Length: 183
Image (cartoon, rainbow, N blue to C red; front, side, top):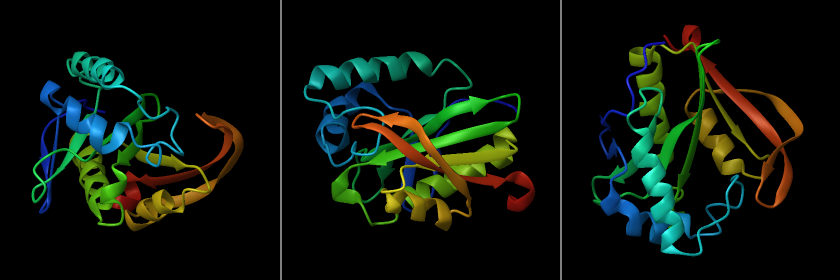
């Protein structure tokens, strides 16, 4: 793969860009403090702005790594970030990138994540030259599974008790899209 780092991507409705320190309060209020957003994630919702500040600082430091892919999702009509989409894991030995995402609950069901994921898939296949894009979700999180299906990923199976979300161990559904099926 040819790692390019987090570069600005744009769709008809969205700008995907790097997190900026000025986004801290918005991130806290729109998604990181919302327990509905983190229900199926590995981290608990933030209870203080200080938690988001620390997380934001760690994101900013990682942008110097060309294998760090982490975008905030900014709908053009909204004008501020409403969530993130990122490479949760990069596996260079198999040219695989695992994508994860979260978005403020106020913006669920509007197609923003599907549009952002499609843009990231295009970037990873066409620019980074990944061979495989994969994503995972807890079986109870049907909305995430639908996003993956809409973006062309194939359901591969369920790994039993294979991940820990903040509420405990969970099964994980695995989906993927291969470059040969994309092109």
